[in-house]
Image (tube, rainbow, N blue to C red; front, top):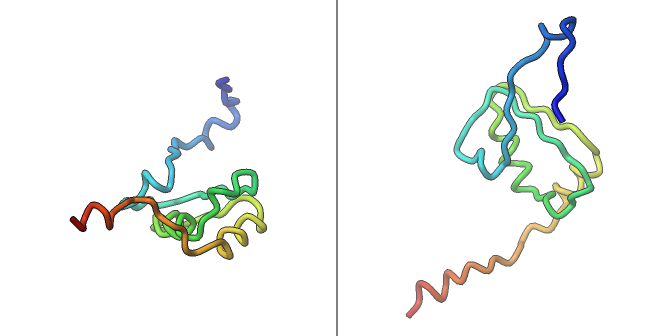
Length: 91
């Protein structure tokens, strides 16, 4: 549902975009806002937080729960990847 902006507040409206950490890889942005929530705890990975923070050129803002950030930082480091790369490289 679209909402209209009050004429009194229209001067404060700024065009912005949202993307995922994965899609932002290799790019930089002047300002990055990262929302952290325990609701989707499976996405709380240290490497995703690092990548998101590294995208910010001048300012990075973390919004959300301190617990979610702690979960991401303390989370499991080694995850088994099922790429079958070994099988593809070895005859």
